[in-house]
Image 1 (cartoon, helix red, strand yellow):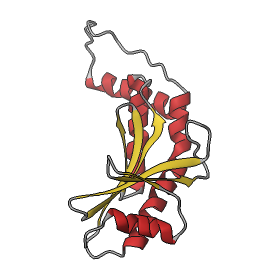
Image 2 (cartoon, helix red, strand yellow; image 1 turned 135 degrees about the vertical axis):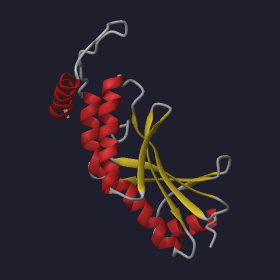
Image 3 (tube, rainbow, N blue to C red; image 1 turned 120 degrees about the vertical axis):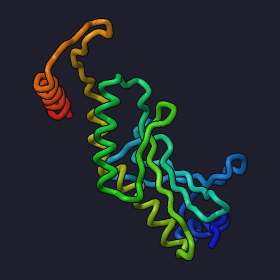
Length: 179
């Protein structure tokens, strides 16, 4: 069963949810109040875009600008990737990733013979819940820059496997205690 933009707007209308349609990008744009998350304007609301792909056979729910991460160092990006990796074990449907300096959260659901209203509202709920659960860890990485001494590229380092594992454990400990 293909989902249309009309199906999305009818579902939002049925629950009294405000939205606007971006005809140019074929998106339904809305927002949802949140408990732990505040956007860049310090408003406790998450912007959400809804659309379909594959001729309406897949529903996409995306929070496009959860956080700006363009300023992160390589070490901080590594820490953020670690949190994202851990978060993906918690949720099977929700994906978190970085694009163009923004952290995004996304759900893609094949619709097949699904009940459109319950799947749509469930997908929105999953995105919001994911952001509410993981935003504190993400904000900790963004607000606490880490500094780890990394050797220069032209330094020649000769170490044994045991020394390398010991160094890795120290770096890992530094990352774990900083989070």
